Amino acid sequence: MKIAIIGTGIVGRTLASKLVELGHDVMMGTRNVADKLANKTPDAHGNPSLGEWIKTNNNVKLGSFSEAAAFGELVINATSGSNSVTALILAGSKNLAGKVLTDISNPLDFSNGMPPSLLPGLNNTNSLGEEIQKTFPDTLVVKTLNTMWCGLMINPNMIGNGDHINFISGNNEVAKNKVKKLLNQIGWHDENIIDLGDISGARATESMLPIWLKLMAVSKSGVFNFKIVR
Amino acid sequence: MKIAIIGTGIVGRTLASKLVELGHDVMMGTRNVADKLANKTPDAHGNPSLGEWIKTNNNVKLGSFSEAAAFGELVINATSGSNSVTALILAGSKNLAGKVLTDISNPLDFSNGMPPSLLPGLNNTNSLGEEIQKTFPDTLVVKTLNTMWCGLMINPNMIGNGDHINFISGNNEVAKNKVKKLLNQIGWHDENIIDLGDISGARATESMLPIWLKLMAVSKSGVFNFKIVR
Image 1 (tube, helix red, strand yellow):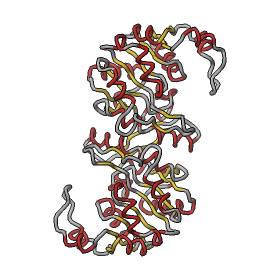
Image 2 (cartoon, helix red, strand yellow; image 1 turned 30 degrees about the vertical axis):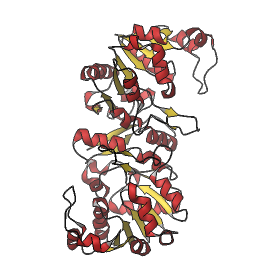
Image 3 (cartoon, chains in turn purple, blue; image 1 turned 180 degrees about the vertical axis):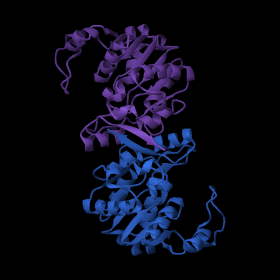
Image 4 (cartoon, chains in turn red, orange; image 1 turned 45 degrees about the horizontal axis):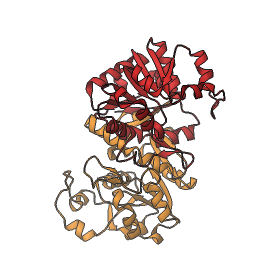
């Protein structure tokens, strides 16, 4: 499948590598390809610049936001939450119309320091997933994978034999099934994918970020996930 | 131990029964004892009126908010979140000073229908637990037990051999240890009590209500809890 990943941060890169490994044709979209490739400085976390990363991942295509969105049969939003709507508008509503847009981002607000809170207007009675769906009514938004560290997104078997959960929500069943199949390919078993119903489920999963961040802070590791005991 | 429970709803009653069973001396506090006892009508969920309930639970004392707070060596806030600060002010800051106040409530806002959201001003960058601590600076507020159905609060072994989690947070270590001992008595093992640090942990656990409510809605049951897989 032709898959576009909007955003070239660590989350987008991690997913891109995995999807290519699975045999998909992947294009990552960024604001300005030439600027990104010219920059040789690692980021604040020590991750290599996009130019350095792409050298060892040269089976991943690179394009502008709109080139990537036009390319993808399925589009993944992996931008930081504060930039998501802007980036997707640049990707172009025409390029996104009728397509499944898998939103894996979180509306984190770093403007008041650490730990981040959720962005004003995108929490409690709204969510990033819902906001994207409202902004692109002709696109089939599916929220998933936003409640765990990106290493676990692509390798759930890393801990607990993969017996922990990923949520999914969205208004369109066909779109959700398409994303579930992709999740199965990545290693997520159906019994560990909890369908929360329509896109308002994004409100619930994005609200898990504060406990996720607190758990990461006290355990000094992001390598954990939630399981539901019944 | 003399324990006061502020609030006489199903959560307060469930805890009161358990704590009496464990040998504690329990007084529940309500706004107006005479009014509450005169009312014979079950509530909207079919729970008996307080007057009926107390007949079969006559080893639980009943008093006003302030009588209960004065009585308790340890005080538990089990009022609905929208009334908590008001109820605790009526309980009296002098009666609460120097005491451990265990806050198990959630700041749910039912004013826009179901499912509830979190109350404006008590979410994301604040929480009910923190608001109570700010309102009563001489009281040792400990947040716990607010992320599960009340039946599980007092009987964690009901599911998964008790292997699921309860969070605790608060600014004072001695107060948290006192509450942990009480949790141990109730059936919570130390390895399943995750200490999130200071009272800002309440922000994280109260933010779990949206996912809790969504999971309850899709599974048609509140008998579940979270576990952390590492």
